[in-house]
Length: 168
Image (cartoon, rainbow, N blue to C red):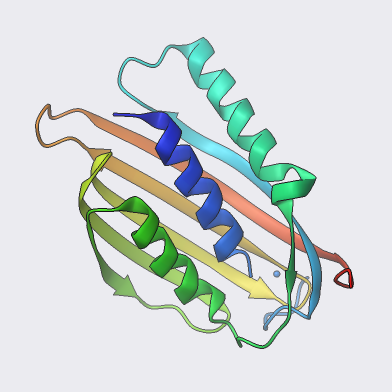
């Protein structure tokens, strides 16, 4: 199993799923800063130093100003959740199916199953909530290679807060 493509897909998904303050509701229009924390990383053959270096690299890339800031224009009324799942499935390759979609405009509760990807078969679970000033979400990937019976996992949390108006 290759970790590099999985990292790229994960960072893409975090940016797309980012759509939470304290009062539940659609995020206000504006610029947001996300914060990503890798909570699990387990790939076959990965040593502890490799794991620590990969986590550091992933968090640094996802939390950089370039990748960590984005604007929400409030015209999609919560469609970011659906868009995240669709674009993630497309980026994964293979055949992906949404097996659970119990979310709403302010809640994310999705489960995707993808077969035949570069990572083998992948199950992706995304949960979260948006609020007027930000969001919180979790994402987990469980991968299995049908040819070798090897498994791998990746999980992360992402939160974001509104930091001002979008630049013109």
